Image (cartoon, rainbow, N blue to C red; front, top):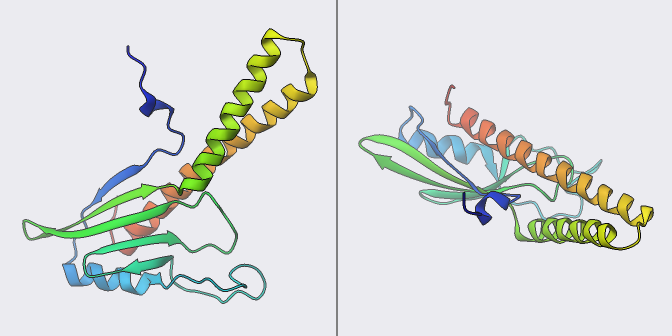
Length: 168
């Protein structure tokens, strides 16, 4: 079996095809009701944050959207969701592409390669317990981040299914 870099991708992009039993106008209206403008205010989180009823923030145009989930806490691993609405054989199809942002992905690759380097260095030279503990904490941080990212992706897709009235 040949080595594949695709299997090493920590924050792999995901693509979904959702087929709601709604008309194009109903899909657009449901998305429009649940997508708020991007809030760049100082008090986006915490006690002084405004309460928003929508599930997503971002942009919605005639047949496409770019959104992120609205949270009441900070999460740099929040995926970005790009969607495209299309009529196909008199049925509405929503194509969704879920990706992580570039900076957290680069940061996680740097941490993982640094942790691997520390472990390999300690295998071939004198054993330094402090460096190994640091590398293990970096690996735990990496595992927690990947699990958090996968959970955020799944929650975003579930929220979109709820908005588009898709039952599993």
